[in-house]
Picture: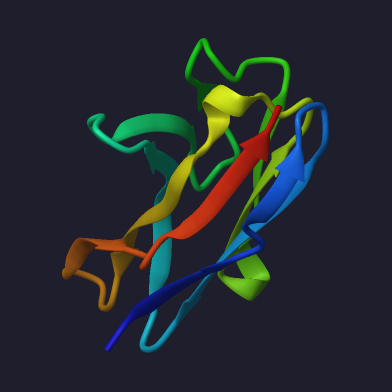
Length: 120
């Protein structure tokens, strides 16, 4: 059984920083792409950032230059460093990962979400 557990959310003032972590545990052969998504109240879930197993990254326009996605493959952990936070960044942030549990078996996993609240 594979689990993704996020941590690091909280309440921060505008202009502040937070670092989210996403730790994968269980029977893991390898992890392909990892990503962070967010969902604000009344809005659809949106992609924030992705990172491939090789370290290539991509970001939503709204967070470019402020957020940095990274990963530690040895620890099966992904990170999202969020700087210069704005009230519009307030949302539940979800981690996603494409995980191989064997050579031939891959599926997407989601974390439970962590709340990020940015006050003005």
